Length: 239
Image 1 (cartoon, one colour):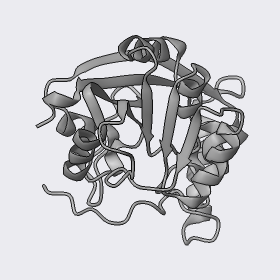
Image 2 (cartoon, helix red, strand yellow):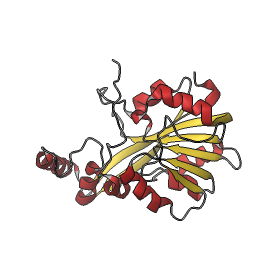
Image 3 (cartoon, helix red, strand yellow):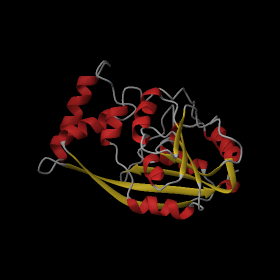
Image 4 (cartoon, one colour):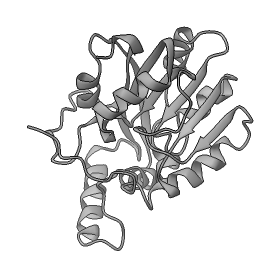
């Protein structure tokens, strides 16, 4: 089945606040591993940086980071997240046309974003902006057994990672999260395909989300056993 890509830059419009409040971050062990891959003084490009969930963790380590984010709502929240960091620069551009200089980046990261990209065009952009011996990393949070069917408009991040890389190194780290009912509702609201309050079917969606919490919560908390998965490969191996 071939994917017919449509404009994805607006799919998170109206969801930035819910996203930053409830989407899982990344465990220290995963960040430490990524740091171990980066050369001293590395320059990062975080592609589809969103609200900065991952970008902030890299910026805190002192690396120079270019945060690439095309969505206005997400970029507004990204600016709040990265305000304390003079080493982080936000760029309003896309993964396929980052506007970064050739051979300027040591580490290219996609946190939860690879499935939204035109993989062939992004691969070419990685080769253009990546330094010799640079690396590309896809990292994302998933739940065990999560294997959704192929969508008509995009790959999941995991499917995209399997297709994008040739011979990647793949690692996993436990990343469990506990949600109250309010945060569970916010988390579900942060998902790209979830209806907004003005959309048809919103009330039915909320009823279903509440019913899931009622079935699965223990003492008022719903535990989601997220796993952070990392794929990485040297740029020169991308064909």
